[in-house]
Every structure is written in structure tokens, then in C-alpha cells.
Length: 406
Ligand SMILES: [Zn+2]
Image 1 (spheres, helix red, strand yellow):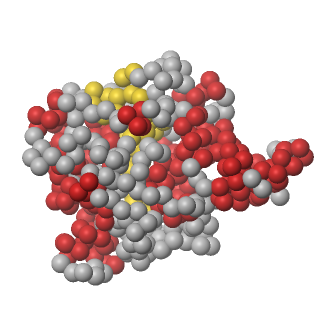
Image 2 (spheres, protein in one colour; image 1 turned 135 degrees about the vertical axis):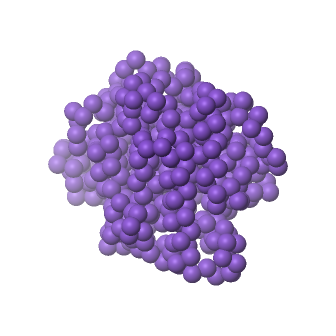
Image 3 (cartoon, rainbow, N blue to C red; image 1 turned 90 degrees about the horizontal axis):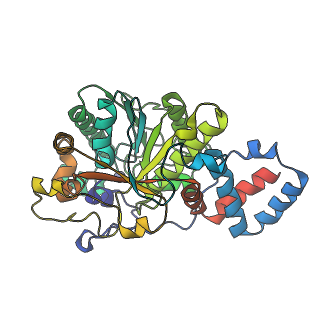
């Protein structure tokens, strides 16, 4: 999603703030995040010694965090061999992305337009090679306060106006996907709160304590005709479960998800929820062939990135240039990979991007900066997944470990 838009979806308390003038989409992460379930499953296999250790661990936030992160990472990578898909590159070595015939691609987008920013070219390539593509919009992008204020020329937009804005943005995503391929890309809307995904991790994990959107006022998706499950409460457990249902049905060979290092809280949270959901799939269906599922993460928000993000007059010629991940992300580990787009794929991606009319109005240069010769990704392995979960604060991990050791 574009910077200006997500600037509008920020926490009104100022917990994080994007500064367009400085080129920074910097987000300060809240200090605490929530409990992640599944303790019951762990409990059944615990030895007495392990219980003792976990009781001890509950006293130590750092150890507790490590234990919880490892438990989730193990679900995704039950053995180390699975961390590198068969025939894949060795860790750390950048190689171009291989798109095989019949890939099943799942793209998780926190906001409408992230899907095309990240994988507008990849979706075309997968379809062209006889595969399938499914996009999941976690939110409708209905938290962009500045844009709604501007659109309705009021300092205090009503919830209905935010919902109308979200409906418009979902329509733009549909039009964009049709531009990439007239009929082959499926779209599902979850309709969770824009600007509130991090809060689900942090404080609204349980169904008994759902979150409430700061803009639409809703506690479940206010898109009865569009959302996959309009009555699903805004809580982390339900989001994890719903994503898990989607993953199990899709049986993806490729999951394209936000990078856990993305500085936008919604993107980071969507990344963690997706990894949890994929881990649940692996754990519940151990013989479903997921050992070769590729986890490809994409970046949208990073300080002073992508290059030319603020260029006053973007030119189609810019698309000849490749886009690479910033050094700070590459240096953090995980092999990088990329898809090189041909001219026709670039042209269709540009056309698709133009369908995000509401975002073009406020972030044209930013969107254009992602229409490039390459789409870069990190291939997440066990180390990166552990690191993503380890960023969930210790109080959550402690609660999780306490549950497991009861
Ligand atoms: Zn976004």
C-alpha cells in the first residue's frame, strides 16, 4: 500500500507516524503484543522435565520468547531439510525465482494495492504457466483518514463514509486484478480493521475481547456483500483461523506475504498471522506436500525506499530499471530472489496500478516506483520465521508458555 494512504491509517494516538517529507515510512512498534494460542496441542506432548523448564521459562521473558518462537517455527520447518525446498538454492545465495508449471500462488495483502505492488508480475507469470492465483485482502483499506477527509471535505467523516471508501478500494483491487488477467485471479476480502492488525496481536487476541475499528466503528467486517465471513469478530484467534482455512483450501505452492521486517505495523502483523496460519496447515496436515511450499516475503515500507518513491514526474522509462531490496533487509539474512518481468508483464502491471484511482490521487510516484523490471522477495526460512515470532513481545510469550505448562 502506498505510503500516504497508510499514513492515514496510522494510530491516532501517534504511536507511529510516517513522514512523507523525509521519505520515511517509519513505524514505531507498540511495546506489547499478544498471546498466540495452540497451548493445548503443546501440552499433550510435554514431559515433566519440559514442564519444569517451561515454568522456569515463564519467569524469564527472553527465554519464554525464544521457546514460543521456536515452537511456531518448528511447525513450519519440522526438520531443517524442509527449510530449503528440494532443488532450491542454498541459503544466502541470491538466485532468480523459478516459476514452475501449475504453481498455486497465494498472495496476502494487508491493504488493497499491496497485491499488485508485490506480485503484479508474478501473478501473471503463474497464470501464464498454467497455475492459479488467489489474493487475500486482510483489510479493505478503510482506515486512511486523510484521504477520506479530503474526499468528503469534512473534518469528521462518518463511519459510513469510511466504509464507502473501503468498498471503493476493494473495487479498485478487483479492476486491477482483471487488468492483470481478465478472469483467472481470485480475490477474497477478510475486511479486518485497517490500522488495527497490530492491535489484534497486541491486545485483542481472544474472541471475548474483539477490536473495534477506529474509523468504521465496526467489530466485525462491515462488508456484508463482499467479505468472506462478515460475522467474524475482529480478534487475532479468528483471523489466524480464517487465514488457516484459506491456506488449507488453497494448498499453495507459493505464499507471497508481507516481509516481517516491513516497518508498517499492519504489514508486520499480517506477516506474523500468515506465518501462523501456514504453520497450522503444516501441523494439521503433515502429509499435504507443504515441504516444498515457498515462503516469499515482499517489502513495501522501509525508510527512503523504494528508489524514486518521491519522484515528481515518474516516467514509463523508469520501469527498465530493476528494483532490489534495501541493503538493511538483505543484510538481515534469508536468500533474496527476484522475478524479472518482460515488457508485456510490466505494461500490464502499470495498467493494473492505474486502477487504484484513490491511491493514485495521493501516492502516484510511490506506486510507480514499484513498476520495475524486477519484483524482489526474500525466501523465508526457519531463521527468519523464528525472528518474526521473536519480535512478538515477551509478555505474550510468557502467557503462551504459562498456558502450555498448565
Ligand atoms: Zn499496505
